[in-house]
Each structure stands twice: as C-alpha cells, then as structure tokens.
Amino acid sequence: MEQEVTLMKGNEALARAAIRCGVDGFFGYPITPQTEIIETLSALKPWETTGMVVVQAESEVASINMLYGGGGAGKRVMTTSSSPGVALMQEGIAYMAGAEVPGVIVNVQRGGPGLGTIQPSQSDYFQATRGGGNGDYNVIVLAPASVQEMADFVDLAFTLAFRYRNPAMILSDGVIGQMMEKVVLPPFKPRRTDEEVIKECPWATTGRTKNRKPNIITSLELKPEVMEQRNLHLQAKYHEIEEKEVRFETDHCEDADCLIVAFGSAARIAEKSVELAREEGIKAGLFRPITLWPFPSKALAEMAKGKRHILVAEINAGQMIQDVRLAVGNEVPVSHFGRLGGIVPDPTEIVEELKAKLKENGK
Image (cartoon, rainbow, N blue to C red; front, side, top):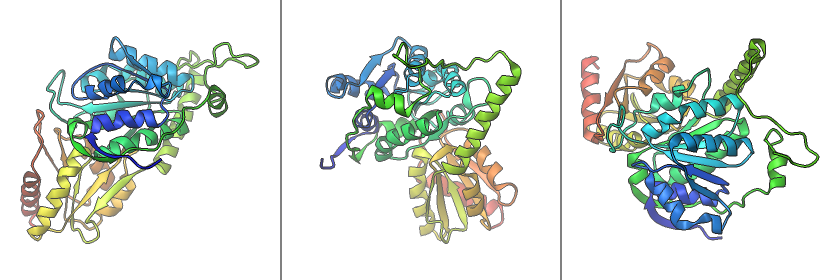
C-alpha cells in the first residue's frame, strides 16, 4: 500500500495510527485538549473495519481499569486523556505496573495544578516519570515533538509495553496535539488472532480457555518475602530498560559550547532558539530527550563535558531540570527557563535567557 501523506492535527494522527497499528481496544473520556482523539475514532468507526473496540467510559478511573483488564488479557489497548484525567488514572497505572500488565496511556498535557487551564503545558513531567501511584515502579515515557512522532510513537509504545510487560506513556501536550503538520501514517498492521495472543502472551488471562491452565493477574501479595522478590524482579527489569531503551536527539551539538535541553513542544521552540543564538555568535546546541523515562543521563553527561552552560527550557516551573542536574553533576552550570499558566515561550525569550546566564557566569 502506498504511503498516505496528509495534513492533520497531532491528536487525529495518533487516533488514525492506533487503528493502523492493530490496536484491539480504546477506552477514554473527553477532556480538552485531547478530545479529538476520541472524536476521530468515533467518526472512523474502526469496529466496522478492523474490529477495534472503542468505548467512551464513564470516567478516567473506569478507562484505566478497562485498560488493566484488556492488557491483562494480552490485548493491545490504549487510553488517552489530559493532565487532570491522567491524575485520576494513577492508581490504575500503579496496579498495571505491579501486575506487569502492558498498555499505552496518552497524556495531551494542559496547565495546572488542579483543573488549571486548557492551554498547553509540560507540567506533568513528574507525574509521568516519577509516577503518581504508590510503590516503586516506572512507566516508559515517550515525548513526541511533532505530529509525525504522534503517529510513529503509537506502535513504538506498544512494542516497548509488551516487550517489558509494563505500562508505556506518550507524553504529548496541547501544542503537539492541536498543531497541524504533514504526516505519513503507518502501514496497516492486522490485529492478532486469539491464538497469536495466547502464543505471544503466555502470561495473559484466558478465562475458561479449554485445555489451558488459567492465569491470575494481580499486584497483590500478602507475604512480604514474596513481595520483596517481586519488587526485586521489577527493579531488575527497570535497569534493563535503562540500559537498552534510551532515546534522544541532538542538533548542532558537534561544535556547541553551550546546550539547551528541552523535550516535546519546547524542543520545537528551542530549535529556533539555537538558530537565533548562532546568528548572534553563540555556539548553542539542542539536546532533546525522547524517552523521559528512561532519561538519557549518560548521553547528556557525555555531551555536557566542557560546555559553558546548560539551559533547560520547559513549559513548567522546572521539573526535567532535576534529571539534568543529576546527569551532569556540578561540572557545568545548569539553569532553567520556563513559562507558566499555559503561556508558550517565544524562541527569543530562550535566547535572551541563555545570553543573560552566560554573562552572569562571566563567559
């Protein structure tokens, strides 16, 4: 089949990619700025073409528990929401992590705290990478910076979720979700048959499947010594993910003597900031984490060697900067620039902040 190149919003691209990537089920609830995902799926009626189930649940809590059930049966299931809605899902996400149930959660971020604003933000970085649920667990977090990546990361998120039996999150925001760009949608991938699901996911629940021992999916364990072993198993898995699944991108870093570190829509803005800084004779480069967890700490530490300054640009009060500081230590001055309340920064603001910090450092 020929590639389909078209102009669409990030939210629509993600919905269409979900259909093409063989997703078995979608469970969601409307909230701005991600509602186009549910609207697109409802309009396209994939249950008539691919057999994909699409359910508007009664709440975000119901959505994540439907995801828990579908993922526990070995199905490729997805939910989408925005910041306050994902906050309501945190208990279910922790349950999925504890029971090693794969599934994909999409967060098209808006400003907070609380109900906040419907305008874009990146203030759910902690919620995604630290986890709002209980216990020691991690969620694999991918941060798209384009409409194309909104489409591409659907299959990638499912691949990682099933490879490691772990929830994966696509952490987008109102800018990427609502902006329109050209996108090449992925080729159609057939949904797996029940036999293929059983073969690929021998751990999955099977109900009353004939001649097969039933599996029990749970995060509950009353014996502390057994629970400790389960936790040690999870930690070993997380260390493996940290070693094998780090993703990042760099731009103009070959000769850079200072770095801007940014993710998602802020990285799009920072690309222009790098260009403007270089026009003024400042050798700036961009380091963009694609996996926010696992964070590309080793790569950033190596890239930071000998740099004059690192400016972390985020649309929040300063969250990823903690991971940047942990990565580079005290060898390089690190500062933060961010806008709050749903205000998206201008590239010139980032340049001015970088110039001010370089001057402050006497460099």
